[in-house]
Image 1: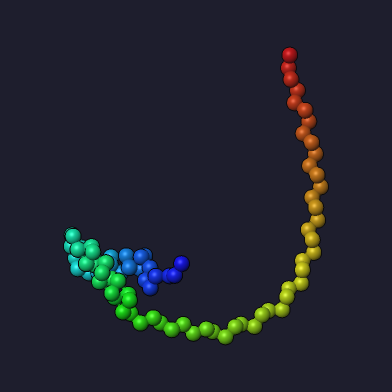
Image 2: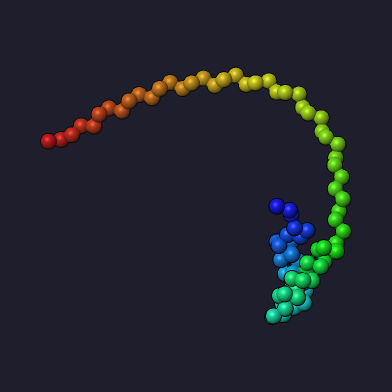
Length: 82
């Protein structure tokens, strides 16, 4: 599926900011949504530049395997009274 130019979450956040800036008026949600959509679509996308790849570190020496713990002693049977 193709990604939308602006996601609903981005539009919602921008519309909320517009609504807050205008003093939280009632009944203008569609107008704010449209303004946010236009604002996001008109905003130039920042070009991302890749940083050069970092050099890989030398592999670490493997740790010695841990010693296994001794098995636990079994519990003594419970005494029952008659």
